[in-house]
Image (cartoon, rainbow over the protein chains, first blue to last red):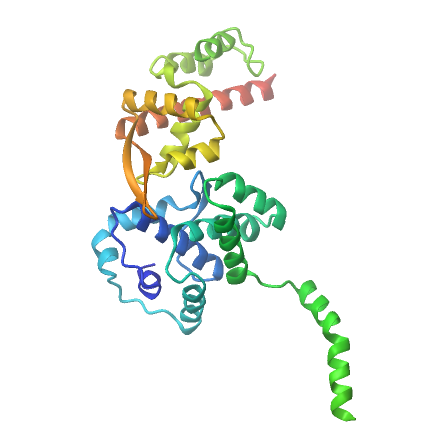
Amino acid sequence: MVACLKAINLKPKIDEFEDRLLIQKAVYLLQLKGIKTNFSYHLYVRGPYSKELTDEIYDNRNKVERLETSLKLSNTEAKMIGEFNELFFGLKPGILEVAATYSLFAFDQKQDAITALKNVKRMKSFYSEAQIAVGISKAKEFLFRPSEKEISELKEELRPWQEASAESMRG
Amino acid sequence: MFRLFKYYLAKGLIGGIVLDSDFLSLIEESKALNSSVFSLIRLQLLSSIAGVGKDSVTYRELKAALQVTDGALYTNLKFLEETGYIASKRITLEGKELESYLITQEGLLAWEQIRNWLKKLVECGVKNNESG
């Protein structure tokens, strides 16, 4: 977890509410992306939240604040964090909160996009439409993995173009 | 509400309850509970705030998640604060000052006690329904 915080350039002050919120949401999104930090998350009034993670950061406050860790990220993990940094540059709590909450509904609980959107709007009604739209679009960009069916549909859609292109190269 | 609940229990009207030792010990245990917390909104608030452990929950998060009016939310938060079960704290988020609430040690103990009692109550009802 500390290695992840280091890689996303977050130097947290554990007593700050905003920093604890950033840790919660960033770790959740990175877990969904595939980085194994093994914190169990559940839906709370805050959206996705891990009580274990809060205990961990309070119990190891000094190490977390100084970003002390001997663990190194693998290349795959570093690549995932690179994508995270690119998308969530500046770590805005509101955007991360919306992105994490949408991800819980859409990617973890596998709700359809409209239901997930309705649930985000209900739980995060204090955020503007623009913040909700940006948060959701970033979550989708970060976590969307096309299914086999979607890949085959996409191939089918692109087939005529590929055939036309091959034809033009031949002749 | 709590008194009505106890009345129904005593009359055996919840879950077809047969009076047995479980039921009697439930009534005994209920005497130790703070009955003023037994309203839907107060239980929801205690559960929501205790749920995040050492962290705090903002007023706006509670309002959005529980979908209650400002009047109801403010009054019941105030009540729980005066009872000593929650404490309020000003926090800053994205440059805005917000009111947040966290559970106290006393509140956590009360919540655990209520939760355990409610679990036993439900189990007692299920057991009696199955045996009936």
